Amino acid sequence: SEVHQVGACLGLGLTAMGSADPVVYEDLRNTLFQDSAVSGEAAGYGMGLVMTGSGDETAVNDLLSYAKDTSHEKIIRACGMALALIQFRREQEAEPIIDQMANDQDAILRYCAMFMTGLAYCGTSRSSAIRRLLHFSVSDVSDDVRRAAVISLGFVLCNSPHRLPGVL
Image (cartoon, rainbow, N blue to C red; front, top):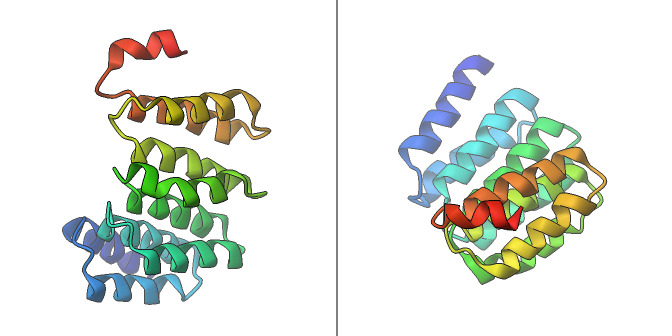
């Protein structure tokens, strides 16, 4: 049943978190490609958990192309957040995909680009990431994107919390 698929996808993602295990990734990918909004969402998050911090280009291409091809907002958001997890702590290596998603017409992908910035530069206090997030926090047309940018400032500044009030 779909409920079991959701539990299995999230459980697999958590137990294999950060492992970049290709067998687990492929199982989750097969579930994603069934194009069911609920189980596909869980599969997307699971794929991101498995590939956390790996920067795996195949996974990035799979998730980004599927996010652009599907009509399910839940799946688009899950794919985007999975992409953000894949770029965890990758800093400048994540810049090309951040730029691509931050300039997309789809507000969901821009929203995920803000979290990707926060995760890629998590704890670094990097001024370029702070500038990007501040820019989007005041200029994007979507409330969700602006909110995600402000939340992501917390990720970037998590090791320097005393700086956050001054930045805002």
